Image (cartoon, rainbow over all chains, first blue to last red):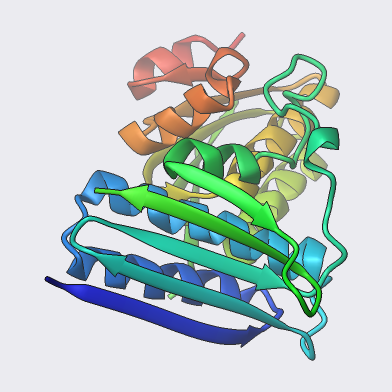
Length: 137
Length: 115
């Protein structure tokens, strides 16, 4: 059985977003995910790390964003952890609602939920927010 | 090489921006924002974005398309889009923006649609 893991601890800057997405997508490619799924995995990781860097850690380069991935032939799980105060999911506006459709931001979580099979948020011991995303083959 | 390359050409009073690369947070979305602002400041308000060379876009890129649309509309101009790849189109369907943006698959039809 093929197994892949990724563990990254990156400073909270914009460049971390592409680096994290590329590392996870490369590992997913080695696991044999199809191109269509790879697009979604790359995008979901990008959005999760963007949220962590911009909103969670507020681009404080002294605060790390931690990315983990473990996968097998059957599927993969990605975690992205920031050190922010978190947010209330129930208060997130629907970006596809008529009053929000022309807003410039607020679509990242929609993409994460669309392209991954499961997306869940946790408040780990030690603080911050961790998002866990799974994708089956 | 820049993440997003933008080439500008003119067809009558329509300015065509040929975009090539990725429109993502950081370099790509900033390049598009700068180009649109410059066109508006030059009074060029009929703009066709040729996206056929755009291979990838994230939510920031989608947000930049929305901002471009809003900026041009506010100036009583017209922004249209050409050559959306399958994946970009999928993102616009998910976000319901395909119903908001004026999109075309070929350049003559897009140019003829400007008033």
